[in-house]
Length: 225
Image (cartoon, rainbow, N blue to C red; front, side):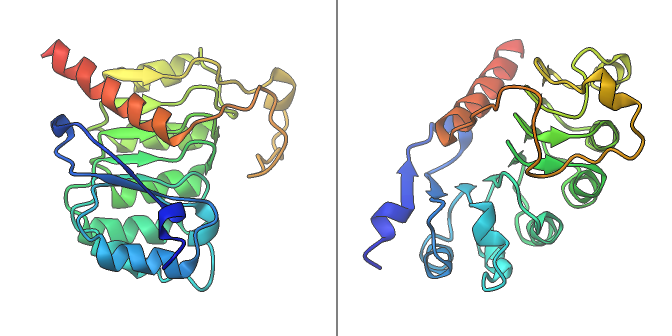
């Protein structure tokens, strides 16, 4: 596996997370490299998987169940979210964090999260397409959330009163810059496309930024205690 060095990036994690290391599978990752990582790195706790790989008909999603100590997963946009979360529910008992930044979270995706991993503590939707119904489902169904990152999202307004009330139980709820233009609000048949046009500046969320957000969130919560 000569390309493994290019595919896997080990990142040191602080002991406060209870992690030994985390791995990011690059966008160019092959199905073979995915299978290799699942077989030789079963102790991963933090993992980033490219959506294109997981949407491939050749990818064996059941391999995700080999990471039994998995705590945090970064996916972005993924069509097989429901199946992946069902596998995590069965095999990954320590799971608490999900990163879907720049992805698409509407009613179906939100229901999958609430059904399979309702007890997650960290959910990152930064720069994602999230409609109001999907957000309400998450806020009502994930009662253990301590951090919900929803900055720069398209599909709901950051100053929505209903959203603020429903999110009052979350220690760190961030939705600055999220919007749903007024001229669209009256369009009952308007559909947010996964790769559609966004009315705000595209928000870039890197792997390091995701880890830093997670690290800062739990440091803040620790200080509050």
